[in-house]
Image (tube, rainbow, N blue to C red; front, side):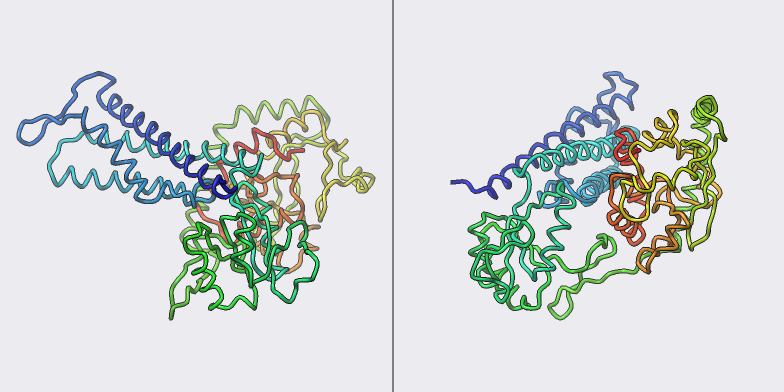
Length: 484
């Protein structure tokens, strides 16, 4: 009888095969578009001059390029089920496979003196790389929805460790169910077991450290995730790895180190130990300078392009209610410096005076005040907030250097006054118009989750992650998730 874990593995292998077919179709279309784009959408010439007067058979070259492209992605493990569906590694491998093949083809064509049209190669690889990343993004969204609807696409996980660390790992995995890890049981130290069945929260305790292999077989898991415990010595972990050999059960080590992104982590073998080196966060330097230049240039271009929309919004606000069009509010930026953030006015002019009467109706935890049906919000204001259009004037703040396009949410001085040491780390970087909080639910997030996301960004920001967040912001704005 097929186990649940076997069904998940079979589905993921089928998903990987489907991805290969989709990638093949995208690459083929890109190569065909590159050919017709280079030769002005004509059916000829179907060849090009070689040094000795022969012809390049594009009818052979194009299919060969498609196969080589797929092979390059596969060699770089772009279809490895362990990286599909979560994280940036999948996109990185697809992009790397495309760029490496492009470089190899260019070098080989130059060395061999083959007259392949450079415009054909440039257009094909440009379209294909963008198409592959877009295709993977669409496929990933489908996979995330499938994992959110049921358990048929998620790995079954047995968590092993001390009770507090088990609970922490369970909370972390459940926070992002689309990652594809579903905890079905736990093994804890022998001393904590009682004569009667136990549970850690709603996770059943199915065994102890002495019965990990038996518990894994009984629960039908395909992954054993080991977290911190004083009793799990190096010798025990080594023996556990040996015991899992040939069982098709993966062994995953989940260190107590959390909320640190992959680029800052490097594993180096030292004296037989896989030591994890964690690089310090980067708060200055060349990357910061580039980020600032990109922010200001992008905000200037965006302001010019959005000028007609800004004028329409300004007129609508003026016709809807009395008061100024632009609302300036004091916020706290990098290093604790206060500045005035610009937003389109979405509330009545005496909104601050009404706040005290509405405080008891706060629907948000922590230091923020949020109401889904706030009576202070105007009719036009509700539309602007729904699609985050009220934040467009913050492009001015980015242009003058007070804010960044991507960063933590800009806090109020009253919030900062109640910060403890950990939360204050949000002020190490410039606040942003958008950020992880924006693409993860906005007002629907709890205070704790919002702070966690902001701190994660501060510790792990990169130019690549900024681009991803900006891309995801479009979907969050269009979908109006957590906007009120």
